[in-house]
Amino acid sequence: MPYIRFENLNKYYGKNHVLKDINLGIEKGQLVTLLGPSGCGKSTLLRCLAGLELVSSGKVYLDDNDITEVSARDRGIGMVFQQYSLFPNLTVGQNVAFGLKMKKVQKPLIDNKVRDILGLVGLSEKIDQYPAQLSGGQQQRVALARAIVTEPKVLLLDEPLSAIDALLRRNLRIEIRRIQKELGITTIFVTHDQDEAMVMSDMIHLLSAGYVEQSGTAIDLYARPRTLFAATFIGNYTILPAADFSKATAETVDCQNVAIRPEIVHMDRQPAEDPDQYHLQGSILSSFCHGNIMRYSVKSGSILINADQIYEGGEPLQEGEQVFLSIKKDAVVEL
Ligand code: ADP
Ligand code: MG
Image (cartoon, rainbow, N blue to C red; front, side):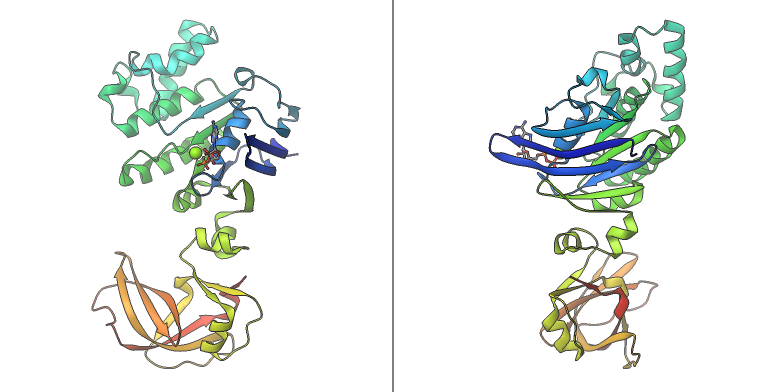
């Protein structure tokens, strides 16, 4: 049995049907991400699990207990939000100690736990400082420490990195993942950022308009999107009507749309022949430097296909240059 289960969960705000018959299981000790565009219901699902929001119908189970009607404070769930939400008039140490004090834990034990957890998040020296003296990233680490010090059964992280600078954000992803693994704490992470989801998660659930669109590992979702929405949201797929692609490759493709990742498109100046690949001829329309890769947009008849090349130096291909494209047939996603 999964550690957390949502069973036929529905949530309405007035007439707005925000969560539509959600059935999800989350395994103990995993970091699971809810990924999806703004407004698809990620925060609402977390809030239903935390008990901050009542469900309209369906059940929520934690560790085989039906917690649908249990109050938020009795669920044993810790939460970190996008906003830092620390107590500004308390020091870092006092912020982290807060939940333990509420639970009437003995003072010496509190001091020990606070010290340990601040060590874990790398903020031991900041124990006597106030939130305003810390950077955004440091404040978020304190919020994380405050949430995990009480040893919750489940940790919920609702876009905790969204307000943080790109570079720091990338470091914090890895930090959070390290801490989560070290503690083995079952964690649900919410983000609209596919890179963040890919890097951090054991499992990703892609949400769209209140539905679970697709669930899987990062590789499942990235390489094998099952719907048009998934292919649009994840990766940098070129999505083409199959009929147009058939015409350009002079091969029959039996589906509605094809989705092609730019990294599976190989460019050459010479034509190639291989029955396991689709072959097309085209010309470079434009190129964009992403630092490590060059992304070329190639025009072939009526279609445009993106092709990535690892950039190792030298002059990129020029606009108008003729190229031959080869695309592995079994890597083309048929939708
Ligand atoms: P996400 O976190 O994926 O961006 P939310 O769960 O916050 O999405 O919101 C999902 C939908 O529910 C949106 O249409 C939003 O407007 C609506 N919604 C969220 N919270 C409330 C609320 N407290 N009252 C009314 N509607 C809400
Ligand atoms: Mg949200």
